[in-house]
View 1 (tube, one colour):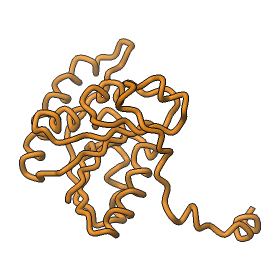
View 2 (cartoon, helix red, strand yellow; view 1 turned 30 degrees about the vertical axis):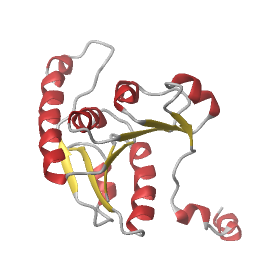
View 3 (cartoon, helix red, strand yellow; view 1 turned 45 degrees about the vertical axis):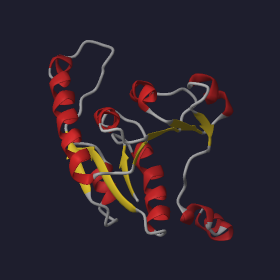
View 4 (cartoon, helix red, strand yellow; view 1 turned 90 degrees about the vertical axis):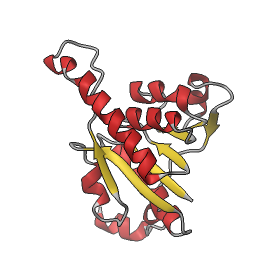
Length: 178
């Protein structure tokens, strides 16, 4: 099995993916990552041996910016590259953590009939995830209140994936450091 992870822009979109990558890789699942050229995701993935592919992405600003005129073309270029990567990588499932880079990846997955699972960490879903939700098979959320903001048959209360090192922490050592 191969899982394609996507999401980026901030560490909050990437670190839950890193926790899942570590857990799944330990079970023999193949993992690949599609992120942006400019986000933090490439830097955070350097500590892993997960293949990383960058695509163009753009932001949907809800205010005036000259970048609004170029971003639709960046999004289109990202979608085209994401489609090529779907053919090349042949993932069995896409796990999207959100961020604007995820939108072209999720749309490409839908074009090639690859199932998509989205995850939303915040109570109120962000714009990129709201755009991705119609293409998802399931939408994982952290909070019961978030279930009211996603399609009824798609929402699943899961919490956020966390690294084992956070769970296995030593309480006394942490207090000593403080």
